[in-house]
Image 1: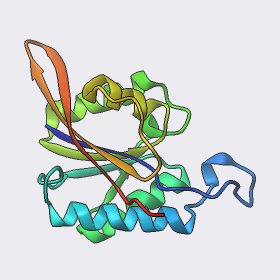
Image 2: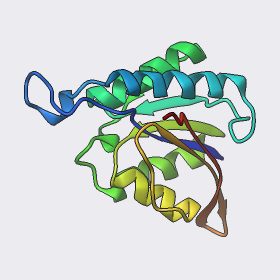
Image 3: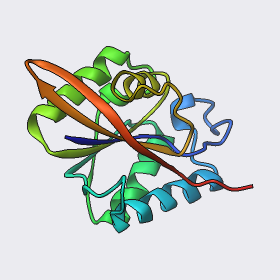
Length: 158
């Protein structure tokens, strides 16, 4: 199964409400999301498998990242509480194992530290920056799940 893990794009430091889950994307975050969307649509390695589903945290910065990607891809976003900023890594892991069992490719948008830990578990790399996508290949063998990171995609600028 191909899993694309995206940490939401760069967000504003504060929300007008003062609530962390309502922090919007900064202009840079919108640019990052748009870049990832065009790269996913182009479908070149390590993004050669179009996701069958897009799942996202309900936090505004992640939801907006996912919506920008979904619009370019002509897809819908499904919101998952397991991807919220407060989620435990075990919640995200359970969600991903369910995806491995039921679909051939998926994209998830969420937050650190849980996503970083998932990428480390399956890909061996423990950093996931804002606006960064990790492309993972996850397989089930003898009842166990293992994976490898195929590559990373992120808009780099000065």
